[in-house]
Length: 141
Image (tube, rainbow, N blue to C red; front, side):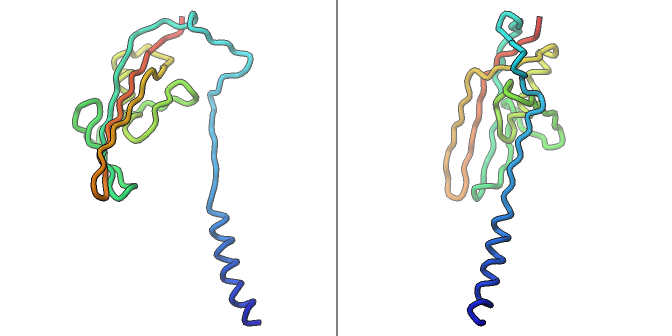
């Protein structure tokens, strides 16, 4: 009887920990198999370079310091969220930096990431990271 009483809390803990994980995938604007998009259907508008810099403390606390080379003001948030595979830049600050592309090219509808770099300077219990992406901007004919 005593051994069963010792096993019950362990089983309850294992059950609680096993039920914590969830997986969610959302791709609302995925390209259907019948739609074919070619480069001849697009008009090249230009190329942008977007960047963000942030500090990480204790491995998970992030503080955004610069967006596109300018000091970041937390109250001014304009984000560009592109669902699907068009704009594959991710991470804190990159969607805020991507809004620069719509300011420069308001008629843009398709974005292609050409190059993405990430530079990290490690320190004791923290790091400084700079992310830069070059993105080509297109519109549909």
